[in-house]
Amino acid sequence: MKKDLKIFLEGEKAFVFYIIFTGQIIQKKGMNISILESGDFFGEEGLLENKERNSTVKSKSDSILLCLSGENFRNAIEVLNYQKLQERIEIIKKMFIFSKKNFHN
Image (cartoon, rainbow, N blue to C red; front, side, top):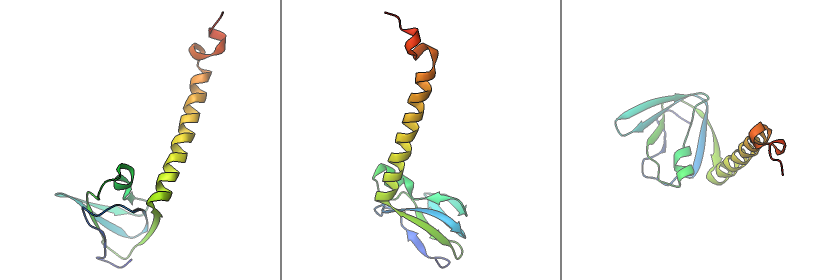
């Protein structure tokens, strides 16, 4: 991606999640301006909330971005949430107060 290339504009529909591999990205939300760099990510809010983009984003320098379609991003989040839920259930099961040993007939 070349310097000063607009990635998306505030108000556009969200379709893609981005991870910055190299370079710098400028994100403008209202009066706030952020500089994002390698390892940072953006674009998740519109995808998670199924809303329009709430910022304008453009490249500050030549950059390489890793992109994930909205559908694949949501699928990955569902898998992670399911795994975390299962981990929490296992922790709760191990707590004495919730163990079968604590419940006598």
